[in-house]
Amino acid sequence: MYEAHFNLTRKPFENTPDSAFFYANPDHEEALSSLVYAVTERKGFVLLTGEVGTGKTTLCRKLLGSLGPEYHTALILNPMLTGTQLLRAVLEEFGLECTARDRLRYLTLLNQFLLEVKLSGRDAVLIIDEAQDMSIELLEMTRLLSNLETDSHKLLQIVLVGQPELRQKLRSPRLRQLDQRITVRYHLRPMSLAETGHYIQHRIRVAGGEGLLHFDDSAVEEVYRHSGGTPRLINAIGDKALLAGYVRGTGRIDRELVDMAVRELKEAA
Image (cartoon, rainbow, N blue to C red):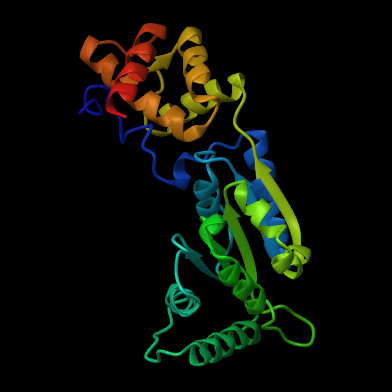
């Protein structure tokens, strides 16, 4: 609705994991560097955690975009599956046709594929998002996937991504072997007040609104107060605030417009 009015190429505050909007604040930049390092150095298991809405999925998309053509990648967004279903999903994400229906055949196909990838001089990376929803048994199965290896190399790098409760789950005695194999861990924190302001302007700039839209200092402070620096909440408030600015006919977003946006979000909840 308001895109044409403000001459935007897209909505600045859509809550989708679009890597074009990736904002490299120090925490996210360090997290991305850690992930890239772990994958390129074949560290095996990697753990990325963060509260709801802190940008984990966007970071995963950015990681996938950072890896070159020498990597085969698979991204599982919904791991609430049985062990057999997860294996099938992994194979399909790697672009393999699955005519069989049993777990042993799936494992054989995956092992053959990973060996071919290694022989071609490439690497395979599996990212599992929302991993806190996985059962103990399913998490243990991911450890068994890491057993697919040659005498000198792991055939599959695995990145587990989830909310803080994933860290608690990994401390279970039944998962101690998996927990011990995680070589790189990173926990995303919410943004500071200053980072929140930079984030807002970054997204406006990417959407083509620089010079047309501006959140003043009072607006940024109010966004931060209500969001706690969590990107998903910043986006929700920002979108409603721009709609309020459109209705009022202004591209200057102040505290009053942010308060209107917050009230509307609370009423809709």
